[in-house]
Image (cartoon, rainbow, N blue to C red):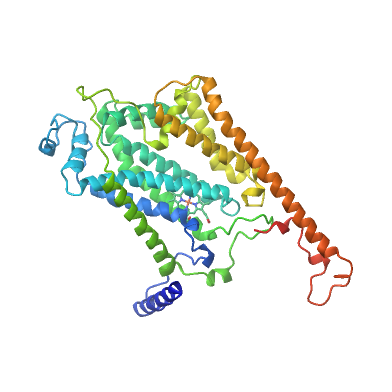
Length: 452
Ligand code: HEM
C-alpha cells in the first residue's frame, strides 16, 4: 500500500522534473518487479561498500604519510608514543588517537573492507548456486572474477600501510607466495619489491592501494555494470532446459525504471549498511598494534587478515610448499574464471547440477575450515594425517548430502512427470483435442515439466 503510494508519487515528481528540466532519461535499464528483493542486488551492496571505501580512503589520505622515516611531527603529541617510530605508523596512530572522529574513520574503513570482501563472496556464491554465469552472462562472470581478485589485492596492499610489525610480517609471507605465481610472479617481482628496502615496498604498496588498484577496480566495475545493462538481471534459477535468459524489449518497457525507483530502493539498503558499519566501528574500534622494528615490544605473530588465513594455513601443512600452495590457488581461480565453459548444462537450478553443487560446497567448507584453523593456530605446522582427518569428513558429508538430495529430487521429479503423463493419457479426455485445448502434442515435455 505504502509502496504503491511511494512509487506513484516518485513517478509523478520525477516525471515532472524530467519534463521541465529537459533531463534525458537515466541510462540504466528498467528491471522486472520481481527483482525488488535484496538477493537480486547483492552486487549493488558490494558497490555501496566500495563507494564508502573510496570516500573514507580519501579522507584518510589527508593525514596518512607513506614513509618509514620517523618524520611525522604530530607523532610526538600522542601521549606515550615514541617519536622515533615510522611516520606511516605515527600518522595512523595520530588518526586513531588524536584526530576527532579519526578512530571511527579508520575503523570503518577497515571493517568496510571486510564487509566489501564478505559481500563479494556472498555475491559470488549466489551467482554460483543459481547459475547466473550461463549464457549470455559468461563475460559478466569472468569480469566479476577479476573484480574479486582486484578487491583481494586492495585488502593485501592496504594491510601493510599502518606499518605494524604484524602486517609487515604477513605481507612478507604473502609476497613470497605471490611472487611464485606462474609468469605474473616473475613479472611483478621487481615492480613490487622495488629496491628491496622497507620504504621501497611501502611506497609500491601505497601506490597500488590508492591509485592503481582503485583505477583497475573502477574500470572493471564499469565493464561489469555495462554487461549487466546489456543482458539485464538473470531470471530466477530454473530446471527448464529451454528457459529464457534474456528479456524482450517489451518486457524492458514494462519494467520498473532504475531512476528513481530502484535507486531509492538501494539507497535504503545503503543507509542501513552505513548505520551498521558506523555502529560496529564505534562499539569495537580497531586497536593499532606495535610498529615495525619496535624491539621493546614482544615478538609479533605473523597473521594476515581473515580473508587470507586459508592460504597461510595451507603453507603450514607439511608437504605443501609455497609453489604447491600457489599452484592449488591458481587452479581454483582458473576453475572459477572458466566455470561458464565447464558447466554446459542449460538448466540453472542447483538441484540439476549436482557436480557443481558438490564442488561449490566443498570449496566453501574448505575455506571456512582453513580460515578458522588459521585463526586458531597461526604458523603451527600440521602433519598430513591431521589434514586428511579434517578435510575428508567435509568432502564425505557433502558428497552424501548432495547425492541424497539429487536422488530424492530425481525420484519426486520423475514421479511428478509420470503422474502428469498418466493424467493426460486417461481414456476419453483428450481423445480428440477440443478447440482451444492443447492436443497431446502440446503436453509439457519431460524436460520442461520441472518448472522453476
Ligand atoms: C567484487 C566486486 C563486485 C562488484 C562491485 C559487483 C557488482 C555487480 C553489480 C552491481 C551487479 C548487478 C546486479 C546486482 O546488483 O547483483 C552484478 C551482477 C553480476 N555479477 Fe558482480 N560484482 C562483483 C563481483 C563479482 C564476482 C566475484 C562475480 C563472479 C565471479 C560476479 C558476477 C556477476 C554476474 C554473473 C552478474 C549478473 C547477475 C545477474 O544478472 O543476476 N560479480 N555485479
